[in-house]
Image (tube, rainbow over all chains, first blue to last red; front, side):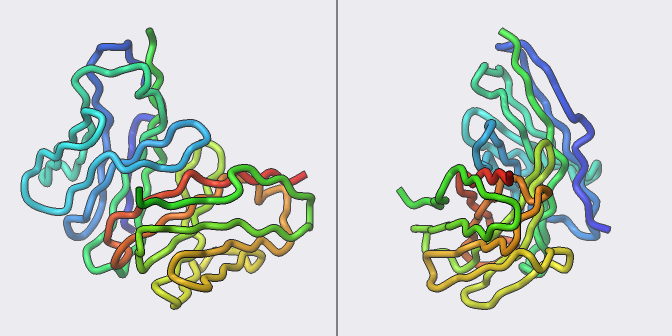
Length: 114
Length: 113
């Protein structure tokens, strides 16, 4: 079955430290990939997406993600975390063509220490 | 700014009392979705509309219904809310189909007393 896995339920980093959130997918073909961020009590905001082309994708708020086909991964990175980045992060995937729904990972909660 | 709007942001209802949540969009997108998100979980798709074509997920309870009177508006009706229906309800839209980028509203937090 198609699935998206975020291995880390909760990550804590210090402000100014670098960040990497992991995402792995299991699909028969290369899916479209997304990262969303959700602040407490808010909706989901799109950070970035990968459809095809350059495997390093730049997003908003200084985030980037790298697609690695050989590892079935789409990890999210930020070189220097700010306290306002504390939130829940969801990786999601779907297939081209629109017949498949968006599948979410279970999310990674990010805590930022001062 | 084009956006997805949900009203109300917080809704309190009583056990068994019908409730309607509202979503509107200024993006002129063809597809509108309703998701249920319980605490510390990923969003779960309830159903979606492609234009006026309604698509229900197989595991969505009959208690949940939806209406889309026009392109801009979509409603979620919960006919007899139970305590287990307390959750955040998220509306999303996409331009073309389910593989297209989905844009989410701020959500409605539903409390059932």
